[in-house]
Image (cartoon, rainbow, N blue to C red):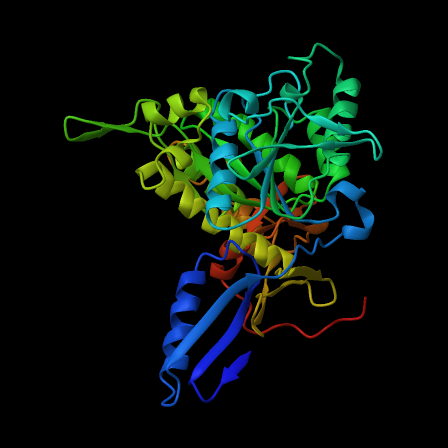
Length: 423
């Protein structure tokens, strides 16, 4: 801070936790207003800046990844749902918010990035001294794809593909990035496991379409991420609807996205309409959010971008709800994040409140699991976190229950907590 009393001028720097802070304009405006309210101040100069990239696991990463703050996977596990479209437009939305962004196209068999963007240099270059890859750029976003390697589309076996992906990702000179968006290939195979093992993914965004078939494959992807301890922070339901003659039509049905949200405890759902311009922009080499930054699609991606920024910041602060089973009092203890609140649940109550398809009919909503089906003295065998939004509880009958934290907070609580008994 610098103060010139003679001129009544105050200059200072306001440092944000991320350059993509969604309310930075509000911070700047309020800073000006508050300081100008001081009687002797005539002029205020506010400079907005952000902290340098500080990866959580920097010392454990390959050199090329050590200056990346957040790595976000965009995944569907189902081909043809618009995952690459979401990945590219999300990346350019984050860049438009002021972040330093890169995109990694992890599909070797059919890379999409060369079609969706139009960099001047369409070939990756090698640094001969360091033997590292120099990414190409388009509209300020760094890009790496097998499609820019000059090899075209690949015909190779899985282990070879995993090696190529590993080399492209870890030997690239990404530099300082706030967000690296990874466009994951469909499926839950070698490539996905390699990516999750090579880099600590901060979070995942799930892309689906309204059909039940899409939900089935997406569910596999969510479970894969949960096993690999990657929190799924948002669901994007693509090709939801279109408007014609003053009406809204849902040609592929409704409910896949909301079903993912409800069943897996992912708190944020974003709908994308069927829009010819969105499809055309994917073929033209100009992302829709860059071609029409004020349009309806860009507004949806802006909301998604704000969600990603906020949720990644929350995850980096490592704020999570603690859910454990206290065997001495035979109760499940839940500690609410950012609060001193702590409460206890009866294990049978938690088991009876399962909302999965095995307990509740998906079509009618009728309860299939009856109250008497659950023994009063049932105890969980294991409770482990499933991302930042739910826990996975394994019961003696082998059933694995997904219990979102929000749902746990609505259950009937134990008022008279029993005293510990000797184990």
